[in-house]
Image: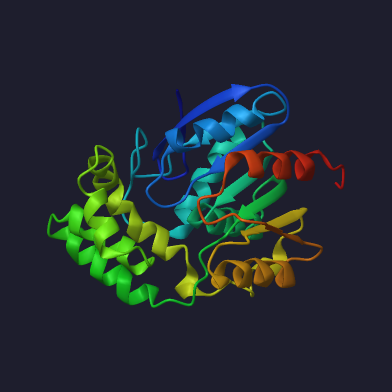
Length: 256
C-alpha cells in the first residue's frame, strides 16, 4: 500500500500490481480497494492496475465537507501517481465518479463504465434519510435502508446482517451518502458529459434492471463517439470473467 495526497490534504490509500499501461479501478457502494482483487488479478498481466480506497473508506482519510469535486480531485491524485495519465474503469457510483472526472478534464487515456446509477430514483430524500441515520449512530440501519431501496428483499437483507461481512458494510455505510451525491439526482449529467473527449465505453448487464441499459444509453447519447455494449446474462454484480475481456479489448484498441 502507498498513500497519495489529494488537493484538500486527504490521504488516499492505493495498491498497484502488474505491469504495462496504467489502469485505475474506481469502486462503487459498499466497496473499497480490496473489492477488486479478482478483477485486478485478471488485468495485471497487461496493465499496471491501481486500486484505491475512495475517501472515507478503508485506509483513506476524509475531509469535511464532502463534495463531488473533492472526489474528482482524489481520482486525479491517483492518476497523477500512476504517471500522469491512465485508463479508468468505474463500476456503479464509481462509474459516475469517473464520468465526472472525465467531463472535468482529468487526464484519462480512455474510460469504461459499468452501470452508473442514474436510476431516476428520489436520491435527495434517501440521502437525507441516510444522513440522519449515520449522524444518529445507526450505520446498520443506514445500510439496510440503502439495500432496501435497491430492491433487495427484506428477508435477504435480514440474512445479510448475520454474515461475517456485515460489520464491514456498516463501516462503509457513512460513504453511502457520497455515492448518492454522485447520482446527480438520479439523472445522467447530460450537460457535462459532452465535455468528455476520450474514448468511452458504457457497459450494462443484460439481466440487470432496465434502468442500467437506459443509463448506459444516456451516456452514449451524450458523450461524443462513445460505445455501448450489453453483456448477456450479467447483473449489477458483473462476473469478472465476462468483464475482463471487454476491458482488455477496449483499452487495447488504439483510438487515441
